[in-house]
Length: 162
Image (tube, rainbow, N blue to C red; front, side, top):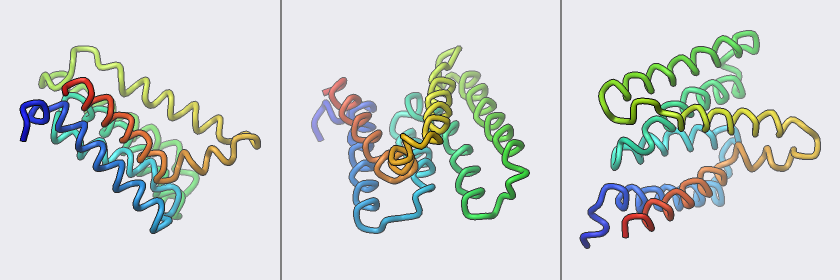
């Protein structure tokens, strides 16, 4: 293995590119239930954090609980009346993980990325409720979305350290 690929960010970049290929393959061949795309993004971030924990851990641990709420609600496990409470619990779990990661020194003292990521996801979900953006909603919750996100993150991470 070359010296450049041995750097943690370069390894994480390669990992993101591999995850992107897997998500694109799943999206193209298996056509999974659409609502699982956000869950694939969160779980993929957690997997990528094993290669460089300080980069993707907070995003993965913040997105995954929200994605679990969406998936359990969409398949009927979580009743609609419990949805708001489940979102509050998901936000609490994400903030608790961010606090613990900051205390352990995995991230900076004031981690901002989980809040920004959740705000972007929230605005996108609100925006997809309008009739003009229904086709975008299909992309946003499908497996193509994590494929695009992982590919772009992989290219950026790998390019920064090669």
